[in-house]
Length: 548
Image 1 (cartoon, rainbow, N blue to C red):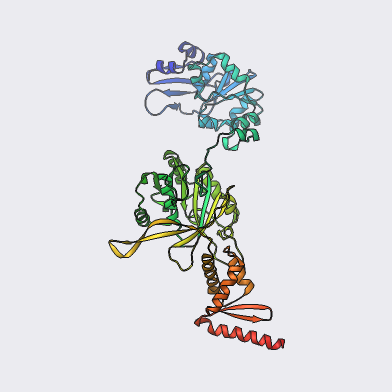
Image 2 (image 1 turned 135 degrees about the vertical axis):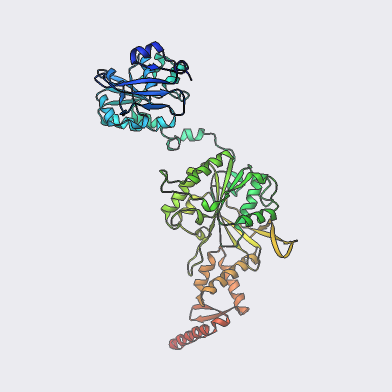
């Protein structure tokens, strides 16, 4: 670039800048003299026209106001970013000043020269410039100046571009007339996510027409949790959901896909080999290129205290990839592997949800999580089975609990315990259909996740009740009727069904019923617990003799 081309690109008048600022130039650089308040030369700054380095200084160069000697007796001045922009304003007859060492070096020493003046801050419109506006306003205020902020139209990077592309002295003076105090500027320039809206504005917003990506299963935005014990098929459900999302085929041939979406898995639970074999087993070949996995999930961490915003560089890079690949659903496997801190602490849990919302705004997030182990004498609903802080269930839109159907190895119940503003689905059964591996007859693979109908039949409830009772007596030799009922009620089984199953288990000699006055106790009938059982029966007899 020649000096003449540079001046033309900034619409600078060569005669004006030479006469008023002593600017000189040659084929390689433009020389900008920097003078002090006494008009004595401090040093020269050079704008290089060739090579990678843009600016250099004479030895001893330091941050200074340019041109400070011209504004000493003025009541108002524009504070801009860079000598060229400053000179361009003077060329229009508008007094201006700038720091010589870059936008980030403006400090109280420089600001002290502006004490008592009305100072119009007009920095570049790029992020580097706009991030410094608040600092400039604070430093100027502390130094006794009165700052106002000029907002250049965003299509102009800086003042030189503004004038070069058609701006005039009159239009710039109008911007000065419209300049804002910092408090006013902060309101109009606060980040979009910090702004308020009135009820009228809320109702006028155009929002996505579909509340669900998969009808009543997966919301278009927000968190969905699938909770269950180990080996209840959670990973298979997410794979089949992902397949429906990218193909548009109803999930389980039952639930309509309202809108197709690309999918990202952040899977710390399953190895590449396991993922590969499961994908192949389920026959997921169509549109598989629209499902993505983090290749090395072991390297992924959500947060990093060394980063200013607390988010890891990996996480922020991944957020950009989500946008680039137009991903609509992110599946996290599992919650415990990805959150930082204690899952029982509401504050730590909140940090997880906040981080995911910042990284992946307006996305649908599906999270796999484990459930609490049952506790003796404590009745729990399905939502209370979610392991960790109750803040988890407070944050989610849709939530499901999965549990195995007794006496089966591949059938499960999926129960929805939260459904946003929609009516909760009735519990339904699914089957993980297995096929024999033709290359290894000793092994099988899951080929399909199959809908098996609503789960409401008495037989199924009875099986579930027996499983819950067996679960109770695996931990306890004996239990009162009240204690057994409370444990089983947490599964959503009616008291009538529980009592029927207890009677049948006594008849089948799986339990022994012992009455002590009005109190009824049940004892597990196992060889290992025979001695303990006899001791309990003897204790009951002794109590009865004492009562007699």
